[in-house]
Length: 240
Image (cartoon, rainbow, N blue to C red):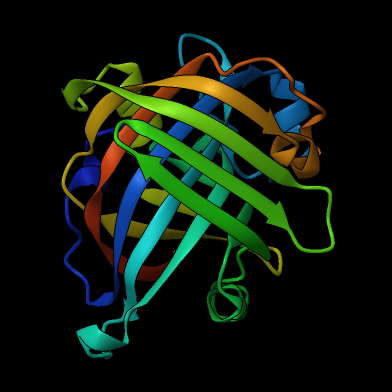
């Protein structure tokens, strides 16, 4: 039984860091489970929406990124894009990242060094004109790239349980395998204020770079959120 509510509850542990996630676009495509099984650790089960597995591409802006011991003025601001799928273990749902790109060398180094996450350095740009947004990304020394232009749509409200918005957006746990052990990390924030999104232009090779083959179709689901303020908690072993 998967408990999709428990991870939304703030853990009673010390906060490791603070972040502000802004201007998030959530793009999702269905993918065959057997393709995901080839890139997801065997210790994790694939989570599905209406019986189908999905891969997501999520470009957004990071603001105020800092360790809990840093003063607010020391927070970093940069763009980030992640490619992720949805998994669960022990009844806990979360995300598994195929890749994360950031327009900050320091952020990439820190995430790789202290979290063991598959971060890459990339050139990124975000431009907004009213309800229209342009986001571009090119990973250094790689064919991985993203060009998306979209229009922000109608309010969908807070993401409620048993909706597609809740399944795709309300993910508070990440899982990663590091040196043969499975770990989880947790974040806490208010429920995403979700909006519809209309994709106007899209070219991407991010999914192919993640080992799932080329996908040239428009996404099945597209959501937008202006953002949330986030508390970050440390990694814990799933074997504990």
